[in-house]
Amino acid sequence: MAIRKALVCGAGGFIGSHMVKRLRAEGYWVRGADLKQTEYSPSEANDFVIADLRLRESWEAILDEGIDEVYQFAADMGGAGYIFTGENDAHVMHNSAMINLNAADFAARRKVRRIFYSSSACMYPAYNQEDPNNPKCAEETAYPAAPDSEYGWEKLFSERLYLAFARNFGLDVRIARFHNIFGPEGTWQGGKEKAPAALMRKVAEQADGGQIEIWGDGLQTRSFLYIDECIEAVRRLMESSFQGPVNIGSEEMVTINQMAEMIMKIAAKKLAIKHIQGPTGVRGRNSDNKLPRKELEWEPGQSLFDGLSKTYPWIHGQMQAASKKIPEVTAGAR
Ligand code: NAD
View 1 (cartoon, rainbow, N blue to C red):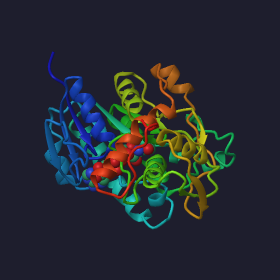
View 2: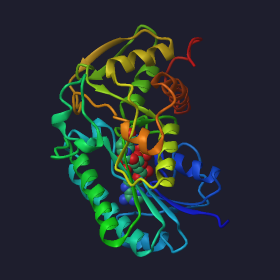
View 3: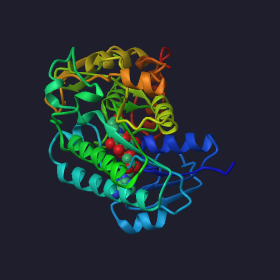
View 4: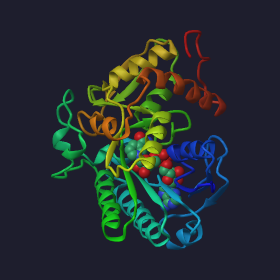
């Protein structure tokens, strides 16, 4: 059988770099493309191209006729501190839309066998996520649309863009809505990090008995999915005949305070929590996995605690390598 060839866009980022590893392990030939190299370990891509995917000439160069599958993860994105302050709205909308306009166009022209698009739970309407104990995020609740960020609006636009290319040009698309993916080799500092990594960094910085800050009252609810589970679900979607959009997330909903307590337990530290003003997004959000269970026969196999336990030592190690002044990992920490 001929070797399958994949293009991974955003291969220098968190999810893209993990997807490169997975595809290589499955025997694919992989080309990665990104504005930047991977930060934490060398990319396993056969060919890695530094390219600005907002530009058509980049696509001319990277998407040749031999590519069977495209995985489109490239986006201008970050955690709440990046997408909810309003300061980055124009960049987020313009940069990500430009990337997706090119991706859909070139994938159709070059007749790739299939293209994956990473949408986000941020496209769900804010009015269904006001009750922290009962958020509604089933796929069919997307309309009437009312995302709470421009990031979410761009995701919704691009979902529709890919579906329009499917309808009019026969582009074979697969669309997933990710719910808070975390794990080793994800951004953990610098302003684009998300809640799990930010909390793990804050806990690692403190000695036992210290204090960490949490944005808002910490009672906002979310679910978080470990990276390996996300990659498995994307591969299942790409191999299935189901187009999506489909949720890829966990149904284990916790408050941010509860997640902080879990991390303290993993680090074997007791820390006080100080709640401060900060961007928090919707009050509640949780994945609804009825559709992925039915269409992909998939649901996460491990708990949030397990995923955090695998990620905390990695962040701690990064901080030590960056020679931050942090206490040694205590005996109970894993
Ligand atoms: P990431 O920021 O680590 O990776 C995105 C990559 O895209 C980065 O390496 C960045 O350099 C690259 N990029 C940005 N602009 C580019 C450009 N003009 N040209 C080329 N490359 C460019 O993010 P991630 O967490 O790996 O997310 C991957 C995808 O999944 C994104 O589309 C994101 O919106 C989506 N998503 C992620 C999550 C999550 O929790 N991580 C949740 C929902 C959706």
